Structure formats: C-alpha cells, structure tokens
Image 1 (cartoon, helix red, strand yellow):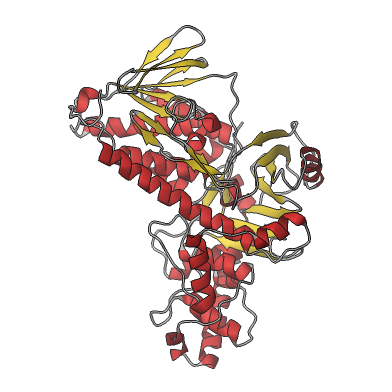
Image 2 (cartoon, rainbow, N blue to C red):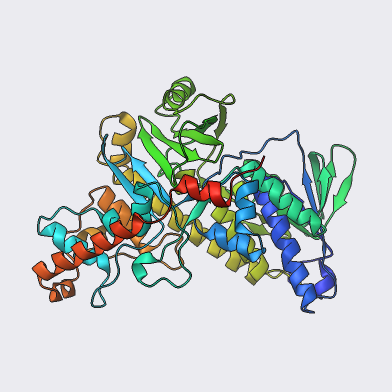
Length: 516
C-alpha cells in the first residue's frame, strides 16, 4: 500500500501488533471487536487478520495499576462484564487520589472523580467557595463531593444510572493487576481470532522507495508481513522511532522526575477505595490497594536523589513486607512527535510517557485506539488523516502535561532542593495563562478536549492554597448568610448519604472477590 492513494476496504489484509502488555492486548481486543461489528453490520466483507508479536523474555513495565473513569467505557465497549473483570484482575474500586504532604508536610487533600456541589443560579459552584474563602471562611472542597466523602469513610456504591440529584452523580475507576488485565484481554482477543506469535523482533524490513514497513523478522527465523503495524514495544519505540525516526519531545525541564522503582507488598488492611500519593524528598510515592496485595512505587529525579536512597525511601514507606524484589526503570517524560507515520501507529509507552501521578497511562492507550478506529485507513493512507491524529495526540499530551506540572509548581514545600527547584522553575505559557486567570478572578480555562474536568483544576488550586483574588460577582446574587446556610445543607446531605453504603471491602467480598 502506498500513501495518499485510494484503496478498497480489503487493502489492509493484515494488522501486525509489535508488543503485548496492556497496550498490545488492549489494541488487539479493540480491533478484533471493531472489525467483528463492522462485518456483522455489512460494512466490510471480511475482517483483516490480526497478529500480535511478543516475547516472554522481554518484560513489560506493568506498574500502571491505577486508572481514571474512562477505562469503564473501554471495557463496556467490548461487552466486558464489570464484575467478572474485577474478579479476574484482582481489582478494587478507585474514587480518586489522596495527596499527602504535597502542599506542606502533614497537609492532605483529595482529588475525586466528580464535580463539587452544583451550579447555583447558573454560576459555577467554585465561585461561591472562593467568595466564602475571601470572606475569611474555612473551605474544604471535599466537603461538597459525594465520592470524596465515601472515600473518607472507606465506603463504595455504584452511582445510580438516574441520580436523583447532581450531587449523586460521579465517576469511578479501578485499581487492578496490569499483568492479569493483559492476560484477560489476550483471552478475549484470541477468542475473536487474534493470533499470537512468540519471538523477539530482530529486524524491521521497509520498502526502499516509500519507507513503509513491510515485515518483522523474528529471532526464531519467522518473518511476519503486514499492511498496518501497531507499535506497542514500550519506551524503545522499536518501529515508530528506531525504524521511522519520528523524533521525541523531551519535557524533563518541566517534569524533572526521570526514574521509578516499584515493589509489591503484602496486604495489611482492607483495601481503601482510592490511590494514595505521598510527596517525598525528591519526588513522590504511590500506594495502590488491590484485593490481595498492594502496589507501591517511588517516582523521583535522579538529579536530586541517587538510586540507593530512592530504594531505601520506598522500602521504608511500605505498609507491609515486600513480596518481590523492587524493579527500577528509567524514562524520559514527553511524547513522540508523531504517533502515526506511514503505515505505523504507536500506542502506549511507544507513543510517549507522562509519569503516573494522575493515572493517565492506560487512558492514553484508550484514546490512541479510539483515534485509530475513527481514522482507520479503509481506503488507503492519507496524509491529512495522519496529520489530524498527530495534532490531537499533541493536544492531549500537552493538556495532561500542564495539569501534572501544576502539582509540582504550586507546592508550598521548600524543605528540599528538589521542591525548591519545582517552585522556581519556568512553566509552559499555556499553563502560566491558566494559573494567571484563576489567580486573577477564579476563571477555569478549558482547551477542549481536556482529559481533566474543570473541578479537577479546582482541586489542585485549592489543595495547594493557590488562592484566587476575585470571583464571578454574579455569585453575590445570593445573600451571604443564605449562601452559608445553603452550603451547610449541601454538606450535611452529602455526609449523610455517604454514610449509607456498605464498606468497600464488603462490596468486593459480596460481589467481585477474586477466585484465584
């Protein structure tokens, strides 16, 4: 197949996925389901063959055990039963993220998957919080979030499909074993015709004139030809970078962490329905509760911490004994300049890496797959399609990048060299503009589409005591005393409602306890 030429649907007869893991098997499952649906509705005469190449000798990063709510839509699109998925992957529920010691040592705030309160008289709720704040009233936005209060009490309830009030509407995500999720999706994909080939990729053969990838030569001598190649080879970017040289945008000037060390530990308490992230001397530590163990890791900057100190810091902060030896890896925060070039499409770590601070890694695989399906080259490769996919990829990564940078820039910590560096570092103009507008008058700028809703930004601004100097004066339409009374009623309603559901542990034991 050559670029910019028209072909019929059958022109892509074979899709080859280079690499397994979460990205590879998400792609395999989604593509197999997609083509089965197109064939069923008569849109295509025959589904292309799908082959996934992976090697058991090559490990996967596999630490992406926390997600954001979009994962539910992905699983649902494949017709996956939620409770069966939870059992197979040893999953727990995630209502948000607790941030400990980020603003100052001893300070904690919570980032829920929900809005705060609800608009009053057509004005966004956070303007009323800012109004009270400027009047000297103590404000905690978590008091106005149902999932935040559920998390505080260690409870869980699935949202009602038709909530009686906006206060009861919220999203949730999961913590799960990434390796088990890949195996779960592998079984799903293979049942739908995906073929797995074991072997290391030794050589990538390209057409001399067009540069298109023609085949992958494996270490066992097998040669796998294809028409479309999906690069899920991880940080190496075996196809998209090593073969096609698309280039990489390095963002370490704004996100200085470039190392991580991960370890599993024994379960010591019932799993909480949220991720915990704790700021450390040169980065931050995650704690992710699964049904039968806990995932832990330390993300840090090698410019401010050596590997031995990092490992000691991680191990000293565990709740239970380590199950396996710690695993370390290096990364460069940033993105590929192109995720779609010629007949190669990159997903997962091959497309770029944003540290797991807000659990976006699996979500980025998901949106990458969605773009591939939306712009799938049924009639040949066209440059305009690839340009638009790459533009959207760039936009999405930049918006998440800015949100992550805010976590470091807005800190009040100055107790270590790392945090002093974060406080004083320059930030991208796009983030500086957002921060300036919020500080000026509480305005939340949204460059659609954004991975994080406006109230996620409210969480960070208020959690880091980054105070707005003014608010939308239309919020003065409610007399101050009446406003305080109305907000107190909202707080009481939410607190009482959050005390009703069963505990998170009881929900799991009753509905989705792991069997193996």
